Amino acid sequence: MKKMLLFVNILFFCCLQGQTVNFDEFFEHSTLRIDYFQTGDRDTEIISFDQFYLYPYWSGNPSSLVDDMNLGQHKVEIYDSLSGKLIFSKGYSSIFAEWQTTDEAVRGYYRSFSASILIPLPKNSFKIVFYSRNRMNQFVEVFSTYLNPSRMRIREENLNRVYKSKRFWYNGNPEKHVDIVILPEGYTKKEMKKFRSDVKHFIHVMFSLSPYRKNREKFNIYYVIAPSPESGIDIPEDGKYSQSLFDFSYGSFGISRYVLSFNNKMIRDVASVVPYDQIYVIVNSPKYGGGGIFNLYAVCYNKYAPGKSSNLADYVFLHEFGHTFGGLADEYYSSKVAYNEFYPPGVEPWEPNITALLVPENLKWKHLVEETTPIPTPWEKARYDSAPDPARLRNERYWGKVGAFEGAGYSSKGLYRPYLDCIMFSRNTEGFCPVCREAIQRMIDYYTK
Ligand SMILES: [Zn+2]
Image 1 (cartoon, helix red, strand yellow):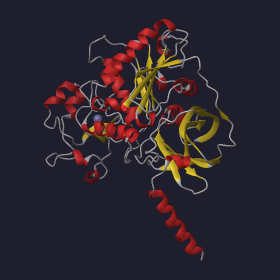
Image 2 (tube, protein in one colour):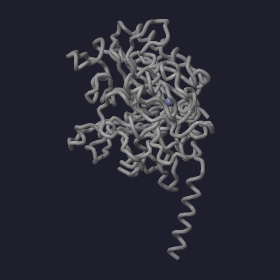
Image 3 (tube, helix red, strand yellow):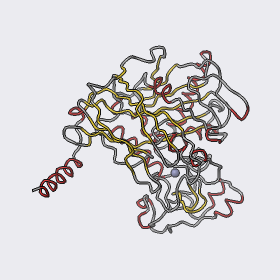
Image 4 (cartoon, helix red, strand yellow):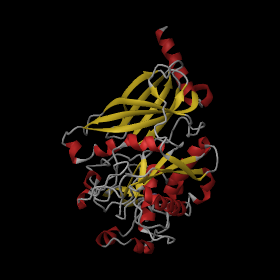
């Protein structure tokens, strides 16, 4: 009898997994923001709750509640307590996961980072499960618990009445559009005009390029008038410090061009004056730099010649959003990074645009490869390594073809990229490779279809 019950349970469970979730049966059209801390070192991760917030809108797609893209360093799942049904999931990455690969964490030093998860507010009691990937890239449960919205202390006050938001362009219902909120960092009150022209410049750059161009009407773009007390942001290596709103700084993890802020709560507070799916922070600094973490935020500096295309900052703007929105990996391998084995050897990365090519027949972008293109695909790597010049890649035999070219993801050997050049590989504004374009399109569809 016991065996029979187990069998029935398994059957029941399998049926539930395949079902689509009816949004209105399980959720309110409002957002529950769950703030928590990730604490640990390279091998340890502890999750502890901080606070809960409620916002009177939901910006995600009610038809895309369960995320089956398998992207990100982490995943959160929400189960309805009563039925045990999986009703929401989402992949994302974190500053903590990047930090875990730095020397500090490898030495066993502990740190805490603030993070947030946005979910549609469940109508009933629910189970929340947090997962992180292990070194083999498999999701492992880190923490789970039951929560009941009617018994939780949820903060509903409007935290940011002081900040006004503007719609840069608006195409309709946030639940069926990709909503990007752009935040100013290190712009004083007097510099808000400059911020607005920066928004205009970069949005123009972004939507001039495929695949964004043909999806223009699927996006809503907002920006927030949130001035900083002082102009500019911190550049520790130059001994320059500014009192800015979100504490963004160059030199993150010891890399001068890497710009991050660990002040997650302030960023979330200000962003949440509008419904958003993605956050873009423009820093008021002429120094080359930026950053982008999947489903967290993207950052870019603001030096460019107005009206001119193909500025270096234009490339950075698109590249960083490729990480944040598309879940794309860096295809380059020659620049210095702070990580130890960011991609462990012999493990297939989760990002859609690089591969360890462990089983060449199963290449994840094989549907884009022509029959006459060999895998791995030969290219004059030694010549490029001795004098890296992306312009000369055009003379390669397999220029313009999708293949598997060795050298990607900070590794000269053992990782492969799909195309000779791409915005995720070199500082060009020519465009994303076909594999990256497809990944970005899939993400646009996830938010809008
Ligand atoms: Zn690419």
